[in-house]
Image (cartoon, rainbow, N blue to C red):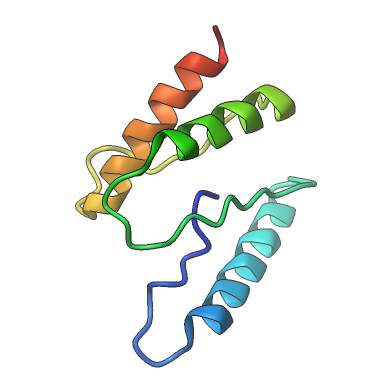
Length: 97
């Protein structure tokens, strides 16, 4: 995960929500048989990602060598997902070279 989803609530603190979202992600992953979940913990709610984020993703892809990478499609209406999609697609292509 690039973020921990901490920007998604007005009533729960960012720290509490991040912990909750990470736990939910780990539980969901375990149902799918995923043994390890990575969180890069970039600030949630950003509408851009830096070269630092791309390098983190490239290094993670190269280290893990996943068979599948799940990412929200570019057609999702949330603008942050568009930037995440583009960042992961660019990083993924660079990681394979």
